[in-house]
Every structure is written in C-alpha cells, then in structure tokens.
Amino acid sequence: MAGSINKVILVGNLGADPKVSNTQSGTKIVNLNVATSDTWRDKLSGERRDRTEWHRVVIFNPQLADVAEKYLHKGSKVYLEGQLQTRKWEDPNGQERYTTEVVLQNFSGNLVLLDAKGDGVPAGGNDVFSTGSSSGWDSAPAGGAAPAADLDDDIPF
Image 1 (tube, rainbow, N blue to C red):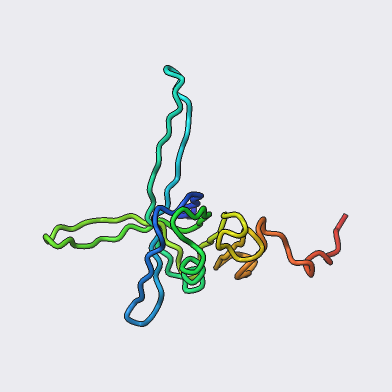
Image 2: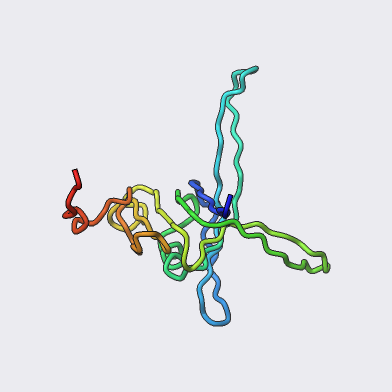
C-alpha cells in the first residue's frame, strides 16, 4: 500500500456540555466526550446486553468550534469525522501520560447535528458543517445534496 488513512467516524451522544477554551492567541478549542453504544442479545441467556465506549473529541477548527459551542449540549446526537491523534503529557507527579483523541483540525473534519428540529438545532434539521471536503462547501444540506447549479451538466449518454 502506497499510503495510509487516519479517519474516524463517530455517531453518538454527548456525555456533557462542550468545554470551550481559548489558546493564548485567542483560537477557540472545544472538547467533547462522545458516547457510542453497542446493543446485542446474549445467545446463551437471551438477555439484552449493551456496552458503551467513551471518546474524547477535540475541535480545533474555529467555525466548527463556534457551531459546537452554540448548538451542542449534554445528550446531543452528533456525527463526527476526524483523525486519531495521541499526545504525550506530564501529570502533576511527573509521570508521562498518553491520551488518544479524535481531532477535527482546521482543514479536515465534519460535524453533523443529528437532533430533531426545535431542540436547539439550526433551522433545516440536520445540518452538516465541514472543512476540507472535496466540494469545498462550508455548510451543505444533510445527505450531501448538490446545489441546483451543478444539475445543469450534460449527461454523456
């Protein structure tokens, strides 16, 4: 294989309100805790089982950070696309620690608000906010529908 891919897609719910902070230069950073759950029926007992995984998400993109700060809250259902990053840090006891996070960078990443209308979500229901997409759109209708201007292309058959 000539290259590699580092892409994470999550659909889950926020476990807490977004934590917003700013860098020294004033850039907004948003931290999220997102829960994803699996549910299955145990073959032996027939009981319903579930397992929840928690994911740390960090948004560095200013536009996505603004959307997250304004519209997301504990329990919000979201679709996120980002990259895995592991960073090293030192705890107060001087021990080296590692944290792996899903990161939405300045030029890559998607955030889709999946909550129903009227629940603090912008008009239009499911709104897609992305950066670095091949289409170059900053905001697109849910489902990735093309703008009407692109429908005038000649079909070659």
